[in-house]
Length: 321
Image (cartoon, rainbow, N blue to C red):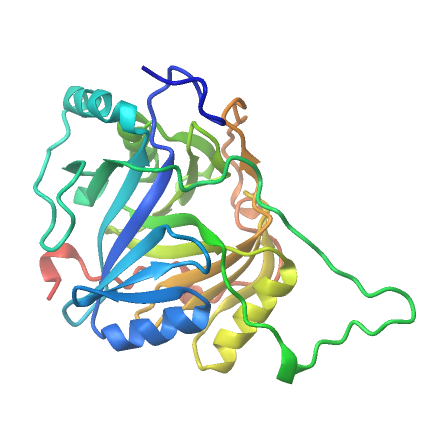
């Protein structure tokens, strides 16, 4: 029974409330440690893998393991309310999904099944990791007669607050929308056919929990991390660029979702994004989704993305090492 007493919960609607975590294989675990640590995440060792946390937050957002010669998106795990897990199991049976065993080394809890394009998906009972309201955003300006200068030698380190969303490549954006709406209860926020779509959670979430990007195969495009100001977006990006990571894209502002962004290219050709002030869709709002023209779907201002930005560098499953 859906408990209306939980703040921010849409009553009598079955749907995932969060991305609980994502899991990647990478060729070099130490390089992953360097990248994500410099990015500002709390990187912890566990059982031969590294886990990604944000500063001061007990939630685990990612699991990185040593793999073959290329990066591989292993799976994505979604959270549901504990009192809905049995209903979700029955719902997924009714959807005709192919249930599977947990991938090697993954936690064997919740429900595992093949998602669209064969991507392993996990649904588990978990605390809601998405916010109940729009995240705080600040812009600090110096008062008249005061210096606003921040010396490079004294520049603060940027620490993301939480995972904002996750973007995956898919072979058919519209079919994937239908699939994840049907199976996970996600809802369309906005799209631009046939290239991209953004899906949100019914119990209140950012403009998108899950983004879908067209490709000839599945894979990860980016993981996105919430910060509290434009300064943090730009400073985080500059820190990574000065450390030699790139080519990158930013600073800019998206149209759909309206967030400020800076995408940092990781050592394997995918991206981690600093994101600030993304639109928020409360649990009691029916968002007016639309199909937008390409020029109204990507960015309002900022530099043009380089051609490789939308390139899927993940090897096709049959070719994975």
